[in-house]
Amino acid sequence: MPPIPLKPGVYKLHAHIVGPSSLVTATEYAVKYGAPVITDRLNPLPIEQEWVIEPVEPEPGAPYMIRLAAHEIAGLVIAEDKLWVNSVPSSERARFTFEPVLGGVKILSEKGLAWSASHRGAQIELTPPKPEFQQTWTLEFVRPTDE
Image (spheres, rainbow, N blue to C red):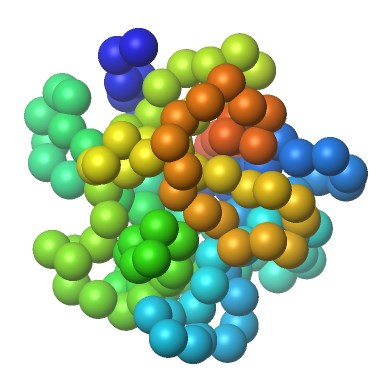
């Protein structure tokens, strides 16, 4: 399917996994490649669960970068087919596209691998795209970036 355009802004990313609602969350402790990005319950502090999604370039069809809303330099990176958040220049951040799927969107890396969350608390992995519930996400628009 062709990628869908997104309105740049601050989002919460909901995982479609069994159990209570889970959001994409930056963990507090950095390890090998930065802080692991996991799915977790709604945290009362949005600092680790609100993400800015913005296009790499201001032209239609450009991929998107994702970073923490509260930390302008803390963006998503991919290492060992897993998601991490780390303070890196924007040129080193991972780029993603979004495709519509039944019940939400699929988030794909530049290599065409899909975000996958096997259970709450698991680090988000990138796997070959399949019609699986664990690869479906809901993007909740919270506010424009400049607010």
